[in-house]
Length: 90
Image (cartoon, rainbow, N blue to C red; front, top):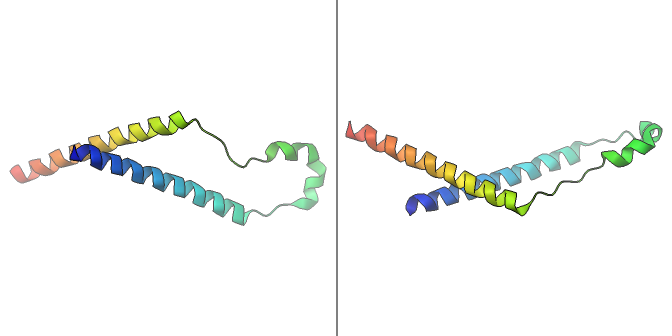
């Protein structure tokens, strides 16, 4: 049960790091954006298609990634503990 809890915490940490990283990249891109208004008047029809503020994923995708990362973390923790215990036995 301790392994499952550790894998669960690891999955939460990885997802939080990913979400914060994506928000940080978006913030940096937004802060450094410098529009070229003078040349934008020539391409008025294409400007409306280029504006994107984000995308929406299915909530099931987040659930499946959470479960998948939990399983991967569990395998890594289990393997690490097996290798760590084998080193001291030999």
